[in-house]
Length: 106
Image (cartoon, rainbow, N blue to C red; front, side, top):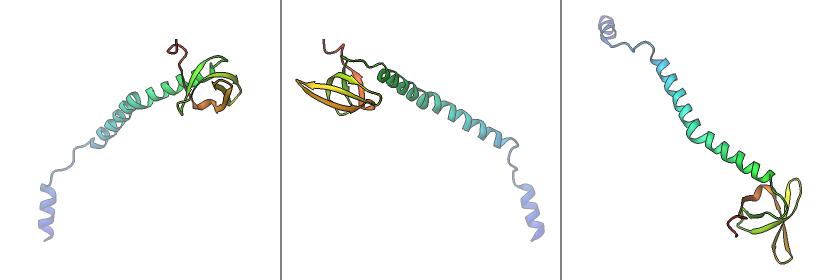
């Protein structure tokens, strides 16, 4: 039985050398593709949105995350007072402002 086991092990194909290196290379390439297709564009979009929020000024017409349209009346560090209709004013978090609709309102 021992002799049969030795013969079967000798006849079995051995794994190719360097197989682990090709696996590591594939994982690195996969991560690189995911970074350039998913992570990088999302970071760019977040940076543009943060720059927009930092550049807000009184009189800008904006839309909040809840879909409220209004004009900025007052800006503080973390919140914005927007005038919605007539004398109705709402204080919202600065991070809830999504976009400017000044150009599309004309």
